[in-house]
Image 1 (cartoon, rainbow, N blue to C red):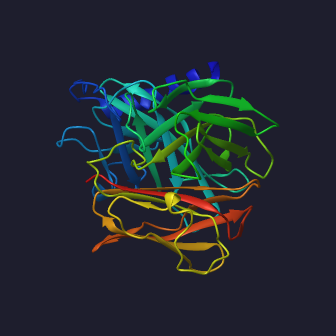
Image 2: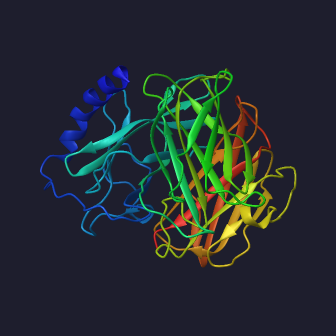
Length: 363
């Protein structure tokens, strides 16, 4: 934690320059799910990223902005939603064996900053596009809707949320690079919902994924697995979000348009709709489909929910060191969102790999 604070202080000096001249007006918190949220597709190292792929709980006159000082990392400024806690997820958007991870996040004045660094396999830093989402929640939800998250520092739970409003989430460390996360009160009969996991490490390359997932009537139980720049298990920080009939931001109505799916049969050339149906949710009743687009490439279609501005996150699933990213910017048109493609790797080789993908519009 001491090292993390040093990194935060050093990097916030740059962040404060970004924020200079802005009026420090804080958005008031709401007792709801979520309180504050924002997402962006960061396609520039400095300036304002793609305006059609960013949205948040800030006033309409504001935009996300980014800055990448020499040597990195990239600082993402979500305007007017400063708060403590919450979780961050990031996904690399690249045609190579790359991933992105969070270094830290926190408030500065009226704004929320997230520091992101991306790597190629082996640990060399790269500047590539990525998607990033921040969300902070309180309150409860009526079943069957469910939402929960955990920010694990690498040593202990730093912050968490569970929309069931009962016992808190727990994390039990296992062998190196493995943890078991229990979200009580969010259980289901049969696997239900979606999960996203992101590595958090301010000092070294780290990748994290969903290692396993069991749904029981009393709780969702998710295994998190993390590796270093190569394929060695690594003890590190991470974030996890569980969603059920809610967007990855925790919100619903709005957005009326969101979906998630679990490609649990990547050997199926498709198009197919993953089973059970509860892991292949579409808020407008559309039937999400997955199909092959070549070795290691999976094309995902979310029908009837494709409305700008929108956002996509993806995470790999399974016990090994595989990881996944997005090949390029997804397509949105005719009320369809087309993710072309989710791409998964083992080291630098493309592989057919189970993965979880989450899509949301802001509308």
